[in-house]
Amino acid sequence: MGSFQSKPAANAKARAEPAGLETRTSDEYLRVRGDKITLREEEVILKGAAIGGWMNMENFITGYTGHEHQLRAAMKDALGEEKYEYFFDKFLQYFFQEEDAKFFASLGLNCIRIPVNYHHFEDDMNPRVFKKEGLKHLDRVVDICAKHGIYTVIDLHAAPGGQNFDWHSDNATHKALFYDHKDFQDRTILIWEHLARHYKNNTWVAGYNPLNEPTDEKHVRLISFYERVEKAIRAIDPNHILFLDTFASDFSHFDKPLPNSVYTCHDYSDYGFPNPPEPYTGSKEQVALHQRSFEDKTAYMRKHKGPIWVGEWGPVYQNANDGIPDWEKINDTRFEVLKLQLGIFGDAGASWSIWLYKDIGFQGMVYAAEDTAYVKLLKDFLRKKRSLAADKWGADDTPVRALFTPLEQWLESACPSFKNRYPAPTAGGVNSSWKIGNHVSRLMRNILLSEELVLEFASVFKGKSYAELDELAKSFEFAQCVQRERLNQILKADSKRTDHVDEKAQARSSGQQVWNWSEKTIV
Image 1 (tube, one colour):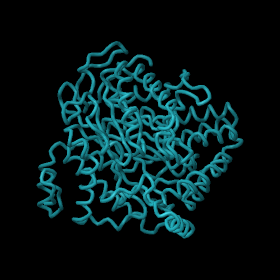
Image 2 (tube, one colour):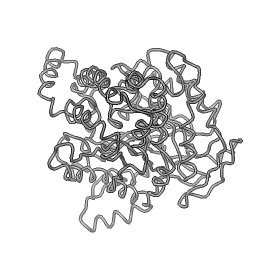
Image 3 (cartoon, one colour):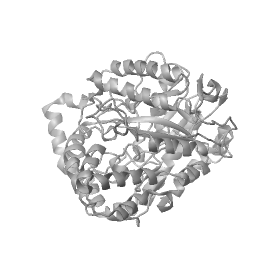
Image 4 (tube, one colour):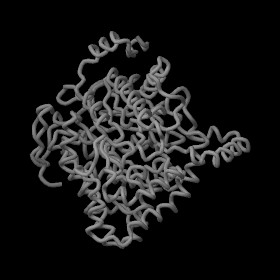
């Protein structure tokens, strides 16, 4: 990594500038002190978003089907080696640049979570040998963010073997083999040692997120791995915070927290997605349900009096192309869910990172415009995969439900224990987690169907010139993106909140329902 000249944005706390990568003093790093994240003993609340779909690509974010390694293999076959390398390097370049950081900082946001895929650092056929180019774009974005007073959290979203059984860990199976093979864990330790060695003196890196949403059915293997990776990182880098995930925010098997660590929850609401339990109206019962869900997910943090970081959350949005007549009204309700959750987080003094910053129009704060080369090229394919519910995330399975419901019913009848298959739905929350239908759709649509459809996706890129490939990748440049204004204004307003007591008083005077965090009642 080159020179590191970092000046805070005007609204950032004044602090010493990292001038190169010489050793820093420990008080220049963010640290955990009691239930707060602090800088020199002053509280810092991290508010921001993730740049998912960038160094860890996801199907719903950029439009393909299946898993990133399948996409890349199909694209290499379609384009040839040189054009393949050219296109993806340009994609990584355009996806996040100086203008993105300026915009992000203008909203008052101060932290970006950066999901990464281990394939950037090593190859499965050449493990333990780190690629020279692996940190090129990560360094660039960390530096750009620092220049604008934005912290970064480096998140290993896809680890060797797959730490979970979903598309976002680039795992093309329905098994998380990471826990069954020590070799996968050993390689992950080496990756984190590599990253810690590289970023240990960078004080604008808030910390490391060793695994995203790990699904260890036995639980104890994950806890052992966290203890091991903490020791490995601390031997090299004793200063950076560790942000520790689990699946479905289930910390019930965890004992004492590791030092200088933030245990994180992901707090998605079913009311922010297609086919919610009921229309969201902001009723007293719905407000209380969201609050109880947040309490359940943060019970471990509060028990041990540690900080709370909501590492992922946020609704998806409909648009005119979805063929839903009342799509704007649906979005209205999802923004209300968003505001409710922000209020809950604020009352708890929680840091948060919304999912996500940029995509092709489904969930992002900004998204590639409809008239860009990339979106126009994929218009027919996107319509097809939407009608097949090929993706899991936010998919509306209405068009195919009649086909799959009988199979789900047959499975439950033939094998009643199937409904308890890990991970079974969690009771009493606002995220239904995994039901039988999730297991069926994972295997049949998200894996089997999608890994064939990705060949069709790649075929539309065949024959493209270098200039055309550059234009396609450039569709993700900030200047060619649309801002989701209403979302961004809500986030901007929240970034300025410092006194929730006054806001609660105002809300009560206008007849709104307000949750009393300390007394756990609605007033």
